[in-house]
Length: 69
Image 1 (cartoon, rainbow, N blue to C red):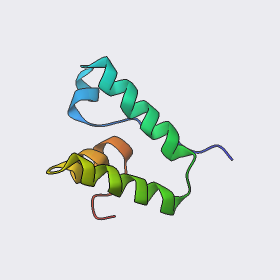
Image 2: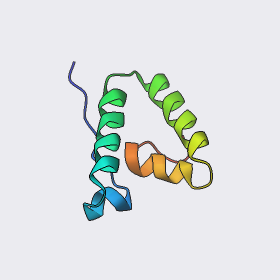
Image 3: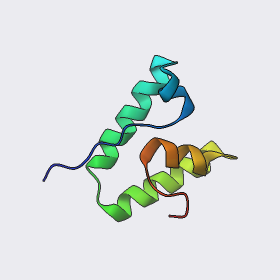
Image 4: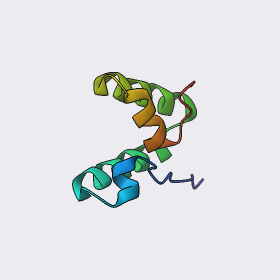
């Protein structure tokens, strides 16, 4: 089964800035494309917590997972 690979919508990626950040976001989305729904949610929640303030919004932009999730 081939899953959809989300294209990051964060301001950095959309502006085409910081190649290292764009590559990291692509790698995160590649990993998420191989996880099931519950695993994606847990991973996104963990990353959002590690990012701190604004992390939920950044993970939502980056992964396409709803902030409410």
